[in-house]
Length: 193
Image 1 (cartoon, rainbow, N blue to C red):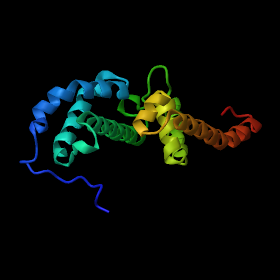
Image 2: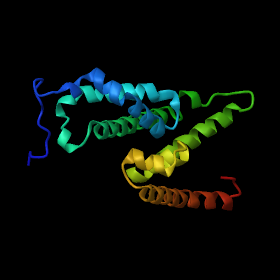
Image 3: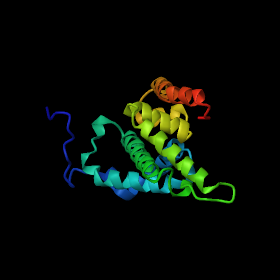
């Protein structure tokens, strides 16, 4: 039962490759490239690289060479770090109804009523998204709201591109079914949805 668990190494068992500075010098550029590809924008790359190496250095005693090379181990940490970061960003946007930059404010071009209506529509969309299964909701949000490609989503969620495409399609169909009756009722009453 415990055969697959990594055996922590003592400081005496750690080799020259376990020096944090050497690990960073050897793998820092590669982790930065992975982060750039997975994030799709350069703004958070340094933060992600920092987070990846903080996790790696904290868990260095659990790394086992026989399970794969250091690069593969760091790649897994990079993917999981970016997934966690995206979940936090999604939660932040959900709680703030679009993030602080997207919070509706009355402008010269938008009346206060339009601002309230947009805010209500956004809240209704997120409430509807909560009705989707987790994997469909994640794929839909990352693709249709965040603008990531199915390939990027597959890398983040550790699944195939085909699975991501199916999840997006199913999420859209479910949302269409949810919104169709409301749109039909609105049309019958002469309202524009």
